[in-house]
Length: 428
Ligand code: ATP
Ligand code: MG
Image (tube, rainbow, N blue to C red; front, side, top):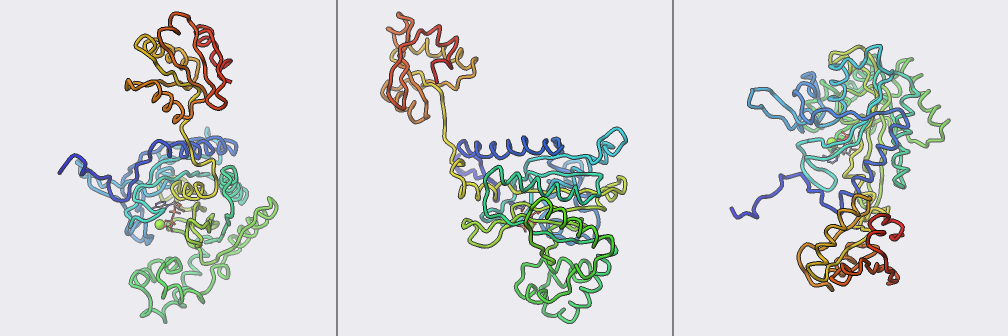
């Protein structure tokens, strides 16, 4: 194996300088916006006990059945790299007793970081990918649901993402899902032989999963299936009516898709997706943000019987969109000033000046490769430096430098001490 034969693992990406700026911009919007809604940052481990994600053997989601990145560690523990942020956040909420009387209710948190799913890699689908997400724990109020949706939409709005649609549905409470389960099994049973193998397996375990099948034949069968909206309990119907009313009041447009189920089994009541059909996705609607309510999850993880709601958005997919729609997302290198050296004395002075300038928060750079002055000036231009100066014996003796504005080529002679004292006055 030659030294260049090392490859990054399948389904991972190197995010290089030039791209990281765009990531930081997106993350910056979340850090600025989410606290305005009362959310504070939380950081939980990237791996957890496998059972945090696979809480019951009946879990039928692809994420738990097929996509877990799990392994046994040296101590014989079954570990899983987190496939999503909610379960770990709820585990931390319960373990740290954040439901206690001294903590705010709802307890609102947001996070950003890598998630892991063993999937077939393709555009916008990786094995390590990143999500920005939030959770509002200990809450069961339609206002919180709508606030969470509004926060997600405002996030995209700030990033100037266009042509998004919000799709909502309800999965109701236990009573609703028991009734719907029965209706769905009765409808699907006669089609049993035509169903895909996955759907056959899931029919009795969790027939709602069949609605989510990507198999074309399954999708045709599902088209005429009964709707969950006809099975809602009084509480669930009223809750969903409230959601729609509040969305209307905030002027938020939405579609209802009664077949939408989402990729995890813990969802209850309100679920939603924010989708884009940007050209870059080939014209189909692709989900860039998905979320919903999970009223049984906190107690399943050993906490009190409280509700919660949150969302997760995929940063890679969002970036594909942004690069397409928003020219600000073609980041370039920037600098305030570049100090070129004409000789060794000039180089020594430039090195010292850089240190002083950076202490004054100037973005400053020089050459370290000993290249010719002409090439150093080219480097200044390549770095998009707004100014450059050539420093040599003469400048060292005179105590002045000629600052050249790279845009209009105007040159100003400035005193070096004054410049390093108050650099921004000269770098306007
Ligand atoms: P999909 O149906 O596209 O597989 P999902 O339902 O599995 O999505 P969620 O679990 O709701 O997705 O995750 C929320 C968001 O995270 C998705 O809308 C997407 O933007 C992103 N996401 C999910 N899986 C991946 C992945 N493997 N690679 C990149 N982004 C992903
Ligand atoms: Mg998926």
